[in-house]
Length: 84
Image 1 (tube, rainbow, N blue to C red):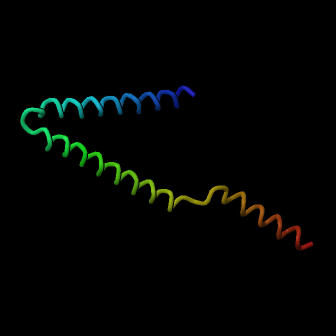
Image 2 (image 1 turned 90 degrees about the vertical axis):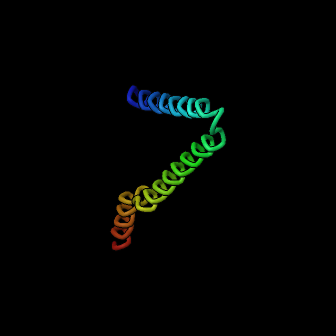
Image 3 (image 1 turned 180 degrees about the vertical axis):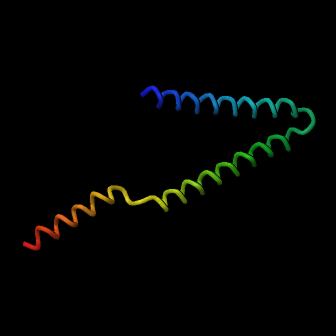
């Protein structure tokens, strides 16, 4: 439980740091390059979200079926019981 809490806290603080960095970039470029700064941040976040979604989809496609070993054992048991 302690490790899960620390992991969640790390993600929370990482998101807070990312939000603060985004706000800082927008404030720094507000007078000169307001729209390009906001657009750049949005594009970077969009690309990162797309990469994460694609990677997650690939991992899920390659993952074994849930309870695959258990289903195999059930099939063996069924075949063994039918043989009698």
